[in-house]
Image (cartoon, rainbow, N blue to C red; front, side, top):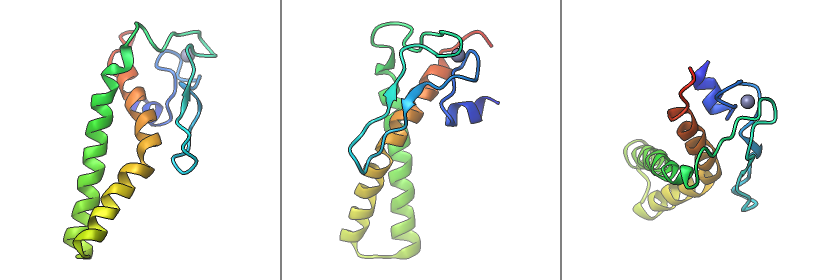
Length: 116
Ligand SMILES: [Zn+2]
């Protein structure tokens, strides 16, 4: 299924190979490492130079949605002071950075994969 393949960052062509070699960890300041080609079917993930430039916009949209969600939760539900609200939003952006990097590139690859 496409949604689970995007979330698991699987190859769009075969659905078996992984797009990323490592998942990365925001706590350790490690970003995910991407494979150039699928190890199962040899599909080239970066179809042209600068292909992942557009994934930044997907990442921006994901980060905005997460920050708005954390703002709504801290402001609307928990009703904590503004400084803690701000801290929660910043921490949310930091801890989801590696996830957003992986997810945005995975979404971007699937958006422009045409063989289905
Ligand atoms: Zn593949």
